[in-house]
Length: 380
Image 1 (cartoon, helix red, strand yellow):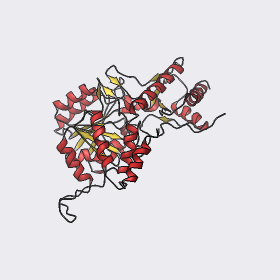
Image 2: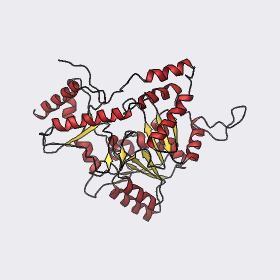
Image 3: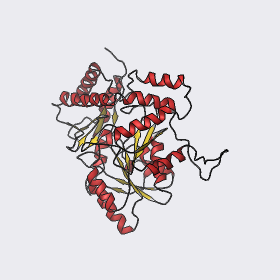
Image 4: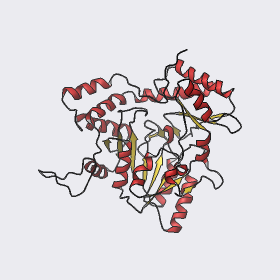
């Protein structure tokens, strides 16, 4: 039996990356910045449909700069999706900003507009309207942006869109990464395309992106010596990593198609398992299916951890759905607003959710290995 390791979402290299990397070496642009960085920014902004973008060392760096440009600082408050990875709020929490977490809705697994509205109504009574709302496009699927943007606009709170997992996904035909005052992409090794590590800050606010660019290069003033009237960060992407990203972008649509097909194969293969339900796709969303995620109903005595353990024995990587931020020890005591008073959606998704191998390079035989292993576990 083939016991080659099957990863959850490994990098998928086409070979085209090497021509861009070779150009960087041939021209000796191996240090930070360079022509591939600028080209990668232009190409990404054009694809997403925004006026400006900034290539950075990580999605986390982009999130941090977005908060800095908006003027978020210690003592202020933000609202944030609870069902996400800690990086979404890590930098602002380090800066001493209060995090209020918002539950998911069942329709998309993303931020619940109902919970968000109640959180705003309560904040208004307290006189503590948030400085921003951090939304997350979970597992490659857009939030209900019309509803969320309407609420945020009514209360005058800017939106930071964490589109780290959703490059290529759309909301009503418009690309994710274009809905926030500032939006963020990630090119971590497990994302739909990768630069091995990196991120992008996007916006129609060209002046804000210019300010972020200044801060991301140590905030060096125009002078013949190193002059600083403010302190910045070392956040820029290198020319080599941008070269990889340009090669990867050539295949983005094919990567999306492959992951959507993998999702469809899982749905078909498990159609007879009544305890399974997959992450829904609302009519207004076209997800990139970055990861195939499903729920195992509580009627089953098999839990996601049971499946994960059994797949691990067969050298297959799988994971639970993100553990919500309001359940994380580090955020103990932070406020949390449920979708409904008696319905904690994100907690249930974590308890019963499972992520299966979904990489665009997953072969049919590898997926069959995963399917057989899962079916065997469900019959235990």
